[in-house]
Length: 95
Image 1 (cartoon, helix red, strand yellow):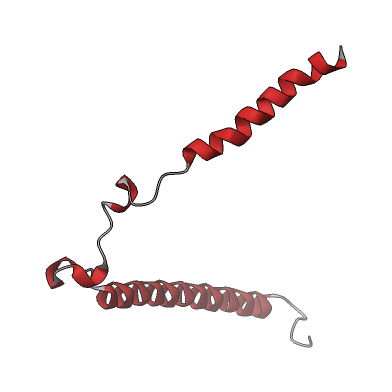
Image 2 (cartoon, rainbow, N blue to C red; image 1 turned 30 degrees about the vertical axis):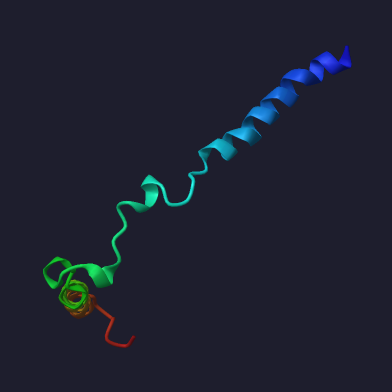
């Protein structure tokens, strides 16, 4: 009776382990038909990596500078508000 209880588990295990064997593709089939080495491409079809990379870095730097500028503006505004509060508060000159 215990052997019959284990049979579905063994069948499932066998099914799961053999499914990966059928998923493996044979070498040289349809998987390699679409691959073209970069050296064999004509110059017009190659991606210009340098301009794209420079553009991406420039974009990130511009965003960073705008962000830092906005932080500096907000900090100046907070400092001016603190200074005006310090002038309006009586007895704050000694602190």
